[in-house]
Length: 69
Image (cartoon, rainbow, N blue to C red; front, side, top):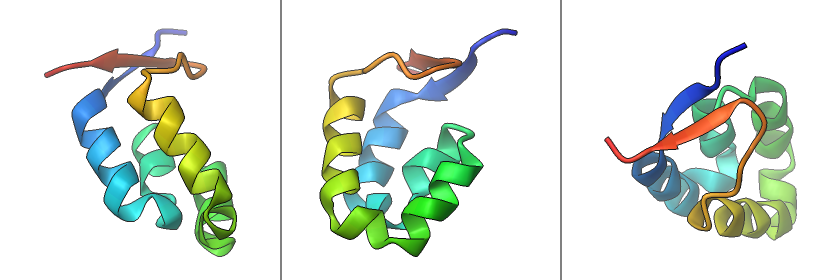
C-alpha cells in the first residue's frame, strides 16, 4: 500500500492550533485516533504535546509520507 502524502507544514500548524481536538490525526487519516484525541482533549494536553513534537521532527508515522508542497 502506498504512503499517504501529507503536507508537513499544514499538519504542523493544525497541530499547534487545533491538536487538542485531533485535527492533526484526522489530516493524517488516523480517524480513530483523532476521535479519541478529541474526546480526551488531547489526552489532557500530554498527547497533544507528544504529537506536536513528533510532527515537528517529521517522525515517520505508519503509511505517511511528509511533503513540503
